[in-house]
Length: 446
Image (cartoon, rainbow, N blue to C red; front, side):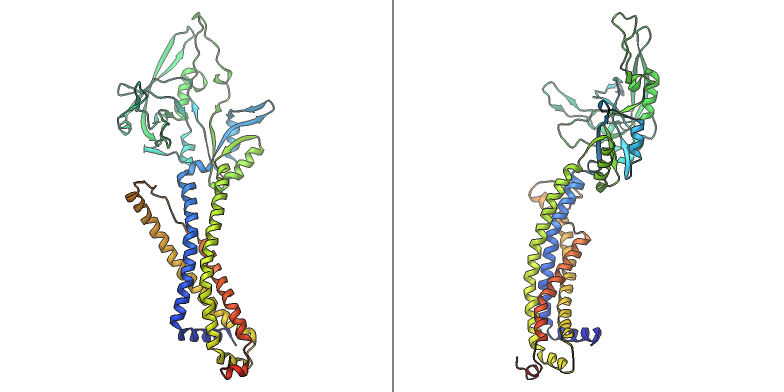
């Protein structure tokens, strides 16, 4: 008996009991949809918490806090270190934060700017790393700068912050700077520089943190260093007598190699962070990444997803009772057909395969319908639940937060489970069909 003949036989018999078949498929679809939607909550929360709440750069960033040396550990990175780290596979960018070693007394439209520090960054690397701005753009020229979100905030004597003017008003404004240096006679000299504010950094995620820094690029740093004759604009302070200037730290000599602080390695993808971290650690670079904590968080979510899938599978198993009942009744109703097939020489394996085919069709139909329904439910939940929470609980939900996420392999897993349960449910009735006696079946005596 060919497969087409078997399928035709199954289809004809399924048409005879459309209502019972519909209810059985519906029960299977409900169980499959329950499994997918329930498990999708775990996938959605994991994706939202790790990728959205934590933030992409925090997930892909590896902080370098030193390298092993023969003398212990050196916290300063140099050009050779930066070059090596840039060459590591799957590294997207290397960023750093160097603090200028003097105040530039910045002013905007005659207003003193009370900045905490002047930070030197590599804007080309920052672009690759995803430097986030509240407004404006990243500098394209050396005479352009970015200022911190809280640069115009003022704090009164009681420690309370006064209402600050809109920081976006400064975009496009010129900022006057004064570079300080002492001459051989110990006299303080001021060299004016003019830059343009083109961007505002993103608002700090922690309310107690204030970003009141001025961010300059490496091009402007080179100009400042040419004026001071020192690294990072460090000052040659005059001696107490005023006749001779003091020596500075050797690393601030202009002839000394440039060093970098607060170095971060930015991976191209979150799943490459661990491998990069281990590779550079083997080379002596002491590092830390949020992936070290995320591994524990991911383990918690993995356990939760397994638990949700297990609970959802129970719903599919409950639906299997309907499949078992449907197939048992099918064997009883078709006993005469089974007797005829056996009388004309049909092999028991062929008969068993016919009933397993019918049960598998029920499982597949239920899985397909359940998957479609689950995607619809997931879509509606992601749209409707934030609205309900915002209106009734007065809580703001991030725009890209997902309560439910159905990856393709979850839908495939649910289909496999549904098909497996259907075959398991139909196996005993199919086995019973092969044991029907031909004479009894023809006499309808079973």
